[in-house]
Length: 86
Image (cartoon, rainbow, N blue to C red; front, side):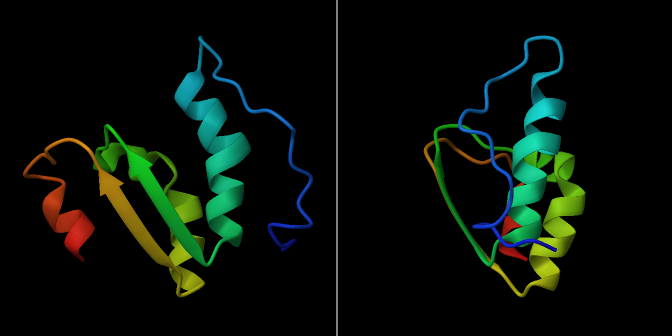
């Protein structure tokens, strides 16, 4: 698998109104997570469904013994806490 540096990235990734989440997951998040060893994110909104949407990328991320650090600006839902504390 190509590294982050050698992947053929686009200069811009824009939301697609008709299929926004699927497009961004397939074209950006999955390839990033499959190649990354660390993921740091600051977000005003977060839920575990976002990670579930990129599950294949997350699986490779875990296989890479990678580390994820999240800073979220909102109160997490009770069902998200156990997932993030694992």
